[in-house]
Length: 232
Ligand SMILES: [Zn+2]
Image (cartoon, rainbow, N blue to C red; front, top):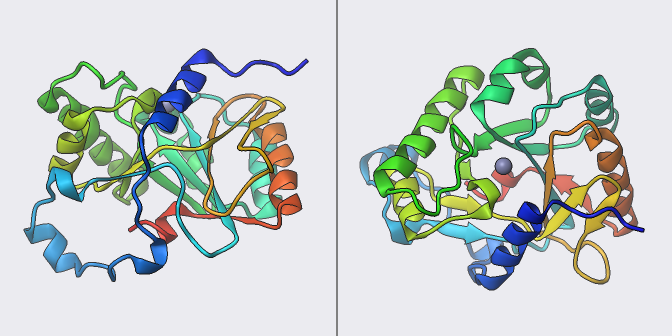
């Protein structure tokens, strides 16, 4: 019997499936914006894009790992052995608590998952901004790099979230379409596809889940890549 995935994740995933992904193709994306322009022209809600998969011709998938307070030497070993690129959606506390572990990682970027991991659904724009802008500052202080991607806790967001993101200078809201947890991979029929975004959490079991996932990725003729290389 397959162990169940926490209902929150399933709920978030179901929510994700009800909202259409943007029809933007990576190959047709506009060229990178001049950084001097980004600092002078504020973002608006219309600039904020929501991603469930990344349209790409490359044979890549994107492994993302969110909150969860458990980082282990086993996970460090797996990451190192396979040189796995990981997008971490960080909340500050677990990162601050395990600073050395996180900062020792190669090929890992640290993105925004709010300060306190509160559900954003019923929060005002101002309250969401405190969570989002505050996380940008804390992650930047810890890692020296400001996040460029945002994932709302539980996958819950509203139009106010987009406004708060724009006010915090973030234009990419990253959801997921695959969940890897315990010894279960919840993915569309037929295996992984290029552009899939995989959700994991920092748990005691993450090292073994990651090995299982890496085998599946290889079996499907894909390789993991960093979201930052496709969304920036
Ligand atoms: Zn989370």
